[in-house]
Image (cartoon, rainbow, N blue to C red; front, side, top):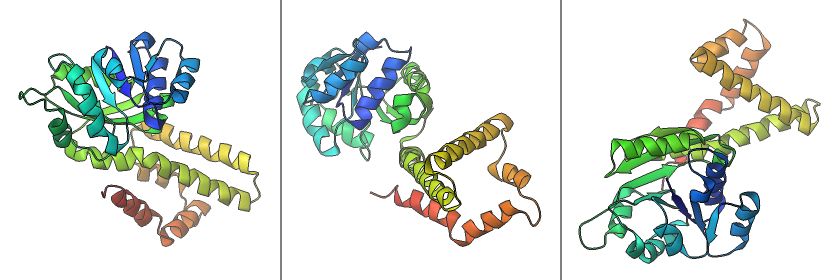
Length: 265
Protein backbone atom coordinates (compact mmCIF):
# COMPACT_ATOMS: atom_id res chain seq x y z
CA UNK A 1 0.00 0.00 0.00
CA UNK A 2 1.24 3.46 -0.93
CA UNK A 3 0.01 6.29 1.29
CA UNK A 4 0.10 10.02 0.59
CA UNK A 5 -0.38 12.51 3.40
CA UNK A 6 -1.35 16.00 2.36
CA UNK A 7 -0.13 18.26 5.16
CA UNK A 8 2.89 17.76 7.43
CA UNK A 9 1.60 19.58 10.49
CA UNK A 10 1.13 18.10 13.96
CA UNK A 11 -1.16 15.26 12.93
CA UNK A 12 0.05 14.66 9.38
CA UNK A 13 3.65 14.60 10.52
CA UNK A 14 2.79 12.32 13.45
CA UNK A 15 1.09 9.79 11.17
CA UNK A 16 3.99 9.87 8.71
CA UNK A 17 6.46 9.20 11.53
CA UNK A 18 4.33 6.40 12.95
CA UNK A 19 3.94 4.72 9.57
CA UNK A 20 7.69 5.00 8.93
CA UNK A 21 8.38 3.21 12.22
CA UNK A 22 5.99 0.39 11.41
CA UNK A 23 6.13 -2.58 9.06
CA UNK A 24 2.77 -2.46 7.29
CA UNK A 25 3.78 0.33 4.90
CA UNK A 26 7.29 0.57 3.46
CA UNK A 27 8.91 3.91 4.26
CA UNK A 28 9.63 4.38 0.54
CA UNK A 29 5.86 4.06 -0.09
CA UNK A 30 5.02 7.07 2.12
CA UNK A 31 4.52 10.39 0.33
CA UNK A 32 4.12 13.66 2.23
CA UNK A 33 3.36 17.06 0.77
CA UNK A 34 3.42 20.42 2.48
CA UNK A 35 3.55 24.01 1.19
CA UNK A 36 6.66 24.90 3.19
CA UNK A 37 9.82 22.83 3.30
CA UNK A 38 10.89 23.08 6.97
CA UNK A 39 8.54 20.32 8.18
CA UNK A 40 9.39 18.16 5.18
CA UNK A 41 13.08 18.53 5.89
CA UNK A 42 12.48 17.51 9.51
CA UNK A 43 10.73 14.33 8.32
CA UNK A 44 13.52 13.56 5.89
CA UNK A 45 16.14 13.99 8.60
CA UNK A 46 14.39 11.31 10.66
CA UNK A 47 13.30 8.97 7.85
CA UNK A 48 15.36 9.50 4.73
CA UNK A 49 13.29 7.16 2.54
CA UNK A 50 10.04 9.14 2.96
CA UNK A 51 9.10 10.92 -0.26
CA UNK A 52 8.51 14.63 0.33
CA UNK A 53 7.26 17.32 -2.00
CA UNK A 54 5.63 20.74 -2.01
CA UNK A 55 3.37 19.56 -4.85
CA UNK A 56 0.10 18.08 -3.56
CA UNK A 57 -0.82 16.63 -6.95
CA UNK A 58 2.48 14.80 -7.23
CA UNK A 59 2.01 13.16 -3.85
CA UNK A 60 -1.64 12.28 -4.46
CA UNK A 61 -1.06 10.74 -7.88
CA UNK A 62 1.48 8.26 -6.48
CA UNK A 63 -0.72 6.81 -3.73
CA UNK A 64 -3.31 4.10 -3.21
CA UNK A 65 -4.85 6.14 -0.40
CA UNK A 66 -4.62 9.90 -0.02
CA UNK A 67 -4.96 11.20 3.53
CA UNK A 68 -5.96 14.83 4.06
CA UNK A 69 -4.29 16.36 7.12
CA UNK A 70 -4.87 20.05 6.47
CA UNK A 71 -6.80 22.80 8.23
CA UNK A 72 -10.61 22.49 7.82
CA UNK A 73 -10.88 25.63 5.70
CA UNK A 74 -8.28 24.28 3.24
CA UNK A 75 -9.91 20.93 2.48
CA UNK A 76 -12.15 22.07 -0.39
CA UNK A 77 -9.29 23.98 -2.00
CA UNK A 78 -6.92 21.02 -1.74
CA UNK A 79 -9.49 18.61 -3.17
CA UNK A 80 -10.19 20.91 -6.10
CA UNK A 81 -6.46 20.90 -6.74
CA UNK A 82 -5.80 17.17 -6.54
CA UNK A 83 -8.99 15.45 -7.69
CA UNK A 84 -8.25 15.81 -11.44
CA UNK A 85 -5.14 13.72 -10.74
CA UNK A 86 -6.99 10.97 -8.86
CA UNK A 87 -8.35 7.76 -10.37
CA UNK A 88 -11.33 6.79 -8.26
CA UNK A 89 -11.36 3.25 -9.62
CA UNK A 90 -8.36 2.31 -7.51
CA UNK A 91 -7.49 5.27 -5.27
CA UNK A 92 -9.15 5.96 -1.91
CA UNK A 93 -9.40 9.27 -0.09
CA UNK A 94 -9.31 9.72 3.68
CA UNK A 95 -9.71 12.73 5.93
CA UNK A 96 -8.21 13.34 9.36
CA UNK A 97 -9.93 16.73 9.55
CA UNK A 98 -12.05 17.08 12.67
CA UNK A 99 -15.72 17.88 12.09
CA UNK A 100 -15.69 16.97 8.39
CA UNK A 101 -18.20 14.25 7.51
CA UNK A 102 -18.28 11.79 4.64
CA UNK A 103 -21.23 13.60 3.04
CA UNK A 104 -19.40 16.91 2.69
CA UNK A 105 -16.20 15.17 1.66
CA UNK A 106 -18.09 13.27 -1.05
CA UNK A 107 -19.66 16.48 -2.36
CA UNK A 108 -16.22 18.04 -2.76
CA UNK A 109 -14.84 14.88 -4.39
CA UNK A 110 -17.57 14.79 -7.04
CA UNK A 111 -16.11 15.30 -10.51
CA UNK A 112 -19.54 15.58 -12.09
CA UNK A 113 -19.61 12.09 -13.56
CA UNK A 114 -21.28 10.36 -10.61
CA UNK A 115 -18.14 8.44 -9.68
CA UNK A 116 -16.81 8.68 -6.13
CA UNK A 117 -13.87 6.97 -4.46
CA UNK A 118 -13.70 4.72 -1.44
CA UNK A 119 -13.72 7.24 1.39
CA UNK A 120 -12.54 7.13 4.99
CA UNK A 121 -12.68 9.32 8.05
CA UNK A 122 -9.62 8.61 10.22
CA UNK A 123 -9.37 10.11 13.70
CA UNK A 124 -6.12 9.24 15.47
CA UNK A 125 -4.55 11.10 18.36
CA UNK A 126 -1.09 12.57 18.65
CA UNK A 127 0.29 9.37 20.22
CA UNK A 128 0.25 7.93 16.68
CA UNK A 129 3.83 9.21 16.35
CA UNK A 130 4.90 6.87 19.17
CA UNK A 131 2.74 4.01 17.82
CA UNK A 132 0.31 4.16 20.73
CA UNK A 133 -2.67 6.01 19.24
CA UNK A 134 -6.35 5.22 19.67
CA UNK A 135 -7.67 5.63 16.13
CA UNK A 136 -11.27 5.60 14.91
CA UNK A 137 -12.11 4.83 11.28
CA UNK A 138 -15.40 5.26 9.43
CA UNK A 139 -15.84 4.38 5.77
CA UNK A 140 -18.11 4.67 2.75
CA UNK A 141 -18.03 2.90 -0.63
CA UNK A 142 -15.35 0.50 0.60
CA UNK A 143 -14.95 -3.25 0.61
CA UNK A 144 -14.45 -5.32 3.74
CA UNK A 145 -10.92 -5.96 2.55
CA UNK A 146 -10.18 -2.23 2.27
CA UNK A 147 -11.58 -1.60 5.75
CA UNK A 148 -9.59 -4.46 7.23
CA UNK A 149 -6.37 -3.34 5.55
CA UNK A 150 -6.61 0.21 6.87
CA UNK A 151 -7.54 -0.98 10.37
CA UNK A 152 -4.52 -3.29 10.27
CA UNK A 153 -2.24 -0.39 9.31
CA UNK A 154 -3.46 1.79 12.18
CA UNK A 155 -3.54 -1.12 14.65
CA UNK A 156 0.21 -1.20 14.29
CA UNK A 157 0.23 2.44 15.38
CA UNK A 158 -1.62 1.63 18.61
CA UNK A 159 -5.23 0.47 18.44
CA UNK A 160 -7.75 1.10 15.66
CA UNK A 161 -11.50 0.66 15.70
CA UNK A 162 -13.88 0.65 12.73
CA UNK A 163 -17.06 2.50 13.76
CA UNK A 164 -20.18 3.99 12.26
CA UNK A 165 -19.67 7.59 11.25
CA UNK A 166 -22.16 8.73 13.89
CA UNK A 167 -19.77 7.56 16.61
CA UNK A 168 -16.82 9.59 15.34
CA UNK A 169 -17.61 12.63 17.57
CA UNK A 170 -17.72 10.40 20.66
CA UNK A 171 -14.46 8.73 19.65
CA UNK A 172 -12.85 12.11 19.05
CA UNK A 173 -13.89 13.27 22.50
CA UNK A 174 -12.73 10.11 24.28
CA UNK A 175 -9.42 9.63 22.46
CA UNK A 176 -8.28 12.65 20.44
CA UNK A 177 -9.40 15.27 22.95
CA UNK A 178 -9.07 12.63 25.65
CA UNK A 179 -5.30 12.48 25.42
CA UNK A 180 -5.22 16.13 26.49
CA UNK A 181 -7.61 15.33 29.35
CA UNK A 182 -5.34 12.50 30.51
CA UNK A 183 -2.33 14.81 30.36
CA UNK A 184 -4.22 17.42 32.36
CA UNK A 185 -4.85 14.80 35.06
CA UNK A 186 -1.13 13.99 35.10
CA UNK A 187 -0.36 17.69 35.47
CA UNK A 188 -2.88 18.09 38.30
CA UNK A 189 -1.52 15.05 40.12
CA UNK A 190 2.01 16.40 39.71
CA UNK A 191 0.96 19.66 41.35
CA UNK A 192 -0.61 17.71 44.19
CA UNK A 193 2.56 15.69 44.58
CA UNK A 194 4.66 18.85 44.79
CA UNK A 195 2.36 20.21 47.48
CA UNK A 196 2.87 16.96 49.38
CA UNK A 197 6.64 17.35 49.23
CA UNK A 198 7.68 15.53 46.05
CA UNK A 199 9.94 17.00 43.41
CA UNK A 200 8.01 17.74 40.21
CA UNK A 201 9.98 15.28 38.04
CA UNK A 202 9.61 12.55 40.63
CA UNK A 203 5.88 13.20 40.88
CA UNK A 204 5.56 12.97 37.10
CA UNK A 205 7.34 9.61 36.96
CA UNK A 206 5.23 8.28 39.82
CA UNK A 207 1.93 9.32 38.23
CA UNK A 208 2.93 8.00 34.78
CA UNK A 209 3.87 4.61 36.21
CA UNK A 210 0.69 4.52 38.28
CA UNK A 211 -1.41 5.11 35.16
CA UNK A 212 0.49 2.39 33.29
CA UNK A 213 -0.23 0.05 36.18
CA UNK A 214 -3.94 0.91 36.14
CA UNK A 215 -4.16 0.16 32.41
CA UNK A 216 -2.19 -3.07 32.78
CA UNK A 217 -4.53 -4.27 35.56
CA UNK A 218 -7.62 -3.65 33.46
CA UNK A 219 -6.11 -5.37 30.43
CA UNK A 220 -4.80 -8.35 32.40
CA UNK A 221 -8.00 -8.96 34.37
CA UNK A 222 -10.59 -7.80 31.83
CA UNK A 223 -12.34 -6.22 34.78
CA UNK A 224 -14.51 -3.15 35.31
CA UNK A 225 -12.64 -0.16 36.79
CA UNK A 226 -14.95 -0.12 39.79
CA UNK A 227 -14.03 -3.72 40.65
CA UNK A 228 -10.36 -2.74 40.79
CA UNK A 229 -11.20 0.37 42.82
CA UNK A 230 -12.97 -1.89 45.35
CA UNK A 231 -9.75 -3.89 45.72
CA UNK A 232 -7.86 -0.75 46.77
CA UNK A 233 -10.43 0.83 49.08
CA UNK A 234 -10.73 -0.44 52.63
CA UNK A 235 -13.30 0.64 55.24
CA UNK A 236 -12.20 3.92 56.78
CA UNK A 237 -9.03 3.88 54.65
CA UNK A 238 -7.09 6.62 52.92
CA UNK A 239 -8.17 5.76 49.36
CA UNK A 240 -11.91 6.05 49.99
CA UNK A 241 -11.36 9.37 51.73
CA UNK A 242 -9.48 10.66 48.72
CA UNK A 243 -12.06 9.33 46.26
CA UNK A 244 -14.94 10.86 48.20
CA UNK A 245 -13.15 14.21 48.36
CA UNK A 246 -12.62 14.14 44.58
CA UNK A 247 -16.26 13.28 43.95
CA UNK A 248 -17.37 16.06 46.30
CA UNK A 249 -15.29 18.43 44.18
CA UNK A 250 -17.12 17.20 41.06
CA UNK A 251 -14.57 14.79 39.56
CA UNK A 252 -16.89 12.44 37.64
CA UNK A 253 -19.41 15.11 36.53
CA UNK A 254 -16.59 17.37 35.34
CA UNK A 255 -15.10 14.57 33.22
CA UNK A 256 -18.48 13.80 31.66
CA UNK A 257 -19.21 17.48 31.02
CA UNK A 258 -15.81 17.89 29.39
CA UNK A 259 -16.49 14.96 27.07
CA UNK A 260 -19.92 16.34 26.18
CA UNK A 261 -18.49 19.79 25.50
CA UNK A 262 -15.87 18.43 23.13
CA UNK A 263 -18.50 16.80 20.91
CA UNK A 264 -20.19 20.14 20.22
CA UNK A 265 -19.38 22.01 17.03
